[in-house]
Image 1 (cartoon, rainbow, N blue to C red):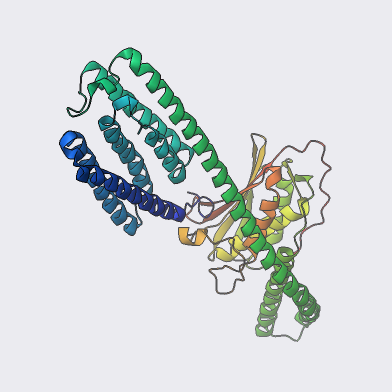
Image 2: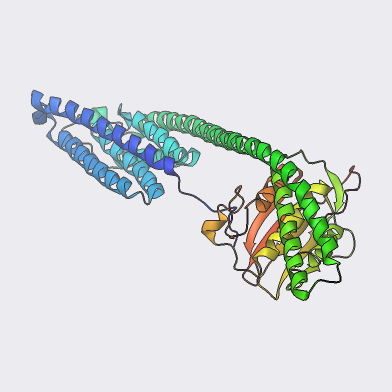
Length: 446
């Protein structure tokens, strides 16, 4: 099961669109009620008792449906089903009005096209298409029912105005079907364009916010890197010299080891901040992912916690070339391995796997830790988000940013549940390295 990458979220804008459509529908029903009441007060009920009763019943049913819509909207649940229900009920409502106002020759047939607009607003192209198919189907069924005598024109209407013969049915059926289809296509196209434009605008806004955060982080990292790394180097060098002293007790050596481990962790933190704050465009190279993984596994085995968490490599011993920036992908793998080690308990294992197939090279890093809950998976790649007390939440953010920069080369990042219940981070790269030079990036450092 994938976590954090394909987690869906409810369409909060659909509730707003449904509220607007419901309000407009109620306003239309009020106008229709006013027009019908005017006819009623003018004495038209005596001339059209059956037709006006049908119209009144339709209006009452419309108001009742509006109350149900409003109640469901307040719950905020089943919004997609509510949208489809409105499309179906609207087409049935127009059919009742068409029936009492002339059948297939009625002037109310454009209302079917109006529902296509509603479907496009609520659901998109699919909603407009379904509304058109439903409207044309019900309208055609009404014409066939009148023609074959399955139903009869309203008894208070002039039967002459109803197209009952086949020769008089074909033209209005085809004309209205064509009109509804054209409106549905145009409405669906415009709705789809608006959806894509809105998505692009959201993405651009998110990128702008991310760039602003990175700019602030860049200024902070530039100062921190200078202020921290110089004294940190002095501390590390001094502790290494002190560690070699023959007069130290075992307790003193243990304390030196702690200082060295924490100094390495602080150095990693500073490096991550610099990597995150000063991104550079990737330079595609033919990078041997298998050799890179083997090298970093050996490096991680000698790094912090290498004694109680084993890091193993599974994959080919031959080349597994992929299209990527070798230095940046080295950083991705190192951060993933380091994150897996930190998430693991004592005496567990971290597995680095490489597989090449179907013009792709897949690298996965799997741990035996607690895994990634779904609520955490949605935020695991955010800057400074961490679930560990000693973490800064930068390493995985760097991984996500680098893989996103490689997306144009076919790179993808997924988070899955591991075989042993832990987390499995999977990076997929393209193996198309035609025309690329071989990677000559320097070896990684812990």
